[in-house]
Length: 282
Image 1 (cartoon, rainbow, N blue to C red):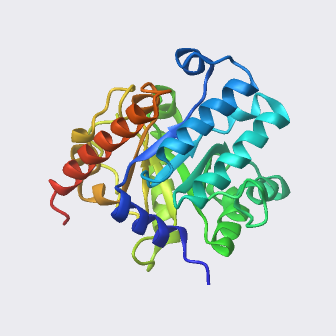
Image 2: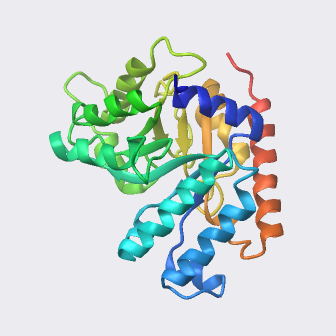
């Protein structure tokens, strides 16, 4: 039987540390590496990151859009990266933020969560803002294939608040409602469930939200966006042990030198371990 994503993620975080490295080959980053904004540059960039870090980092989060913009050749680069990362023992969270209804949502799920797909990933980011129930095809297929989801709940972009902090008739915010749905999905799972939330590390005090969803919390915002590993306990409280902090530019800016990439990733991983260990788990 395939182990659940939550089980595999917990093991990977305990072994390699909780750091998630984003793979975001946008034009300015390619240029800073001395690469062209073309498929050749994309392939060189991606291969360098994978070869340097796949054996030491627990989780990678490729941003699908930066590969899709090059069409089928860009998707081919992404397919190979996913396969190589997973072969090296890392977990892949595909950052595609898919969200739709019915058969379309099912097709998105099959693209990234079906075990026979060339883009099969350990987890997928999804948008619930057509209603949480619209995600059901992805939830069901993820369970079937031992994969997971990260649902946008409390994102770090300022615009997100107008939706996520909006208050429903029952007095709960939309963001809190998404967290409650995820807690239901993960109920009774050990060591943790496979259905996580995206919660920005830059949001400050979130004590008014129940982040204890018995599942992972993908936390963008460390590094270039201004948050630091030391901020994590104050933001996430007792849920900090299940946080998967994402660092993209903070690590990738050190390329193309592989040694510098590895040193930066190791430094962030160590700082995150120290921050998590300093917080009592209550």
